[in-house]
Amino acid sequence: MEKIVVQGTESWHIRTQAVDAHVTEHGGMMAPVVFTLDGGRTVRPYYVNPWAEEHLDDLAPPVLRYLRGDFYCLPFGGDNLVGTEDHEVHGESSFAPWLLESTVETRDETVLSLKLAYTKAQGTVRKILSVGNSAPYIRTEHQISGFSGSYPHGHHATLSGGKDEGIWKIYVKPFDFGMTDASSIAPSSGKEYYSLKSGVTFDNIESVPTRWADTPVTDTSLFPARDGFVDILALYRKVSTADAWKNRISWTVAVNRKENYVWYSLKDASVLPATVIWMENRGRHAAPWSGRNSCIGLEETCSYGATGRKPSIAKNPVSDRGIPTAHEFDPSKPTVIRTVQGVLPVDLKDSAIVSLDITDDGKGVFRTASGTAIPLPAMIDLGWLGRKS
Image (cartoon, rainbow, N blue to C red; front, side, top):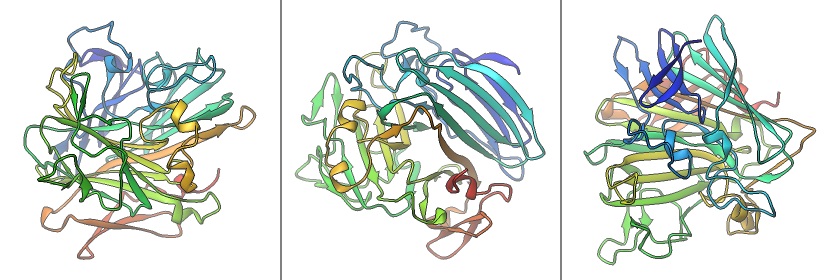
C-alpha cells in the first residue's frame, strides 16, 4: 500500500475507479477524498485544515495537527478526566499513529485495515475502510476490543465550507429533540464567538434560538452562515436496540448547492443516537484557527453533545430523557461501529430529501419532497448497518 505525504501528513493512498482517497497515518483521518460521479464529474466534499502545511508539530490538542475529513473518536469530546484516567480531546484514535494491517481487493471494494493500541486505556481499535471500486461510497467499520467502562464515542465527519453563504443545505431523519451546546454560556470565550443561545432545546434545525433580540431564531440547516461565529448543536433520537433493524437506520444528508451533489452519512441510531453539528465559520481567532476556518462537522456519535467523557457518563439533560450519551464497553465482548458515507448527483430543483426507503434485502432509496427517487449504489447493503453480526 502506497504511503505519501498529502497536505502536510503521511497518508495511505487508495485509488479505485470511483474513489481517490487518502487516510492519514496519525489519526486515521479520511481526507482528501475525491469521488467520481457518473459521467466523470469529480467532487471533493471533505475538509482539510488550512494550517496543514505550516509544520505546527507542537499543536495542542494533538487532533488539531491532522484535523481533516472523517475520523473515529474514542472518547468523543474534550472533558475526559475520570478518576485517574484522562484522554486528549477526541482520544488517541484521532492523533496517534495507526498500523497498517492489510489491503484486500474484492469484486466491489478495496478494503484497508488499520489497528491502534491505546496507551491510556486497556484496549485496541481496528479500522476497516471498504472503498467502492465502481461506485462513490466508503463503508467504515471500527472494532473496539478490551475497553472496560463507559465512554462517549463516534465519527467526526467534516465537510469544507467556503466564503459563499448557504453552499450546504442539511437534511436529517426526524429526531426526538435538539439541543444547543450548554457550555458556551457567555457570547464569547478565549477568542471564540457564539451565536446560538446556550443549552436550549428545539425541534427544527431551520429554527434554532439565537442570542440576538432582533433575530431570535436562525436556520442552522444552511452553511456557511453567521460569518464570524462558531456554534455546536446536537440532534438526539431515542431508538432501542430491540427495534427492527430498518427502523434503526438513520441518515444525515448535505446537499452541495454549488456543485449539485449530495453527501450522505448512514448509521444505526441505536448505536450512535446523536448527530452533533459543529459550524465553524471563522469564529475562532486564537492560533491556529486565526479567523480563517470554514467547515461543518456532521458527527454521528453516542455522546452528550461535544462535552467529553466526564459530562457524558454523568447524569445530564439527554440521558434524563432515556437517550444514552455513553457506551458501556465490555472487555469480553467486542463492539462494532459502522457507517456508510458517499455522494450522489442531485437536481437542485428537486433536492429536498425527506426520507430513506429501505427494502427487506437492504437496498436504499432517498426520496425528495416531490417523490423523486435517488437510489444508493446497488452494492450497498443497509442491513450491514442494522443487522446484528
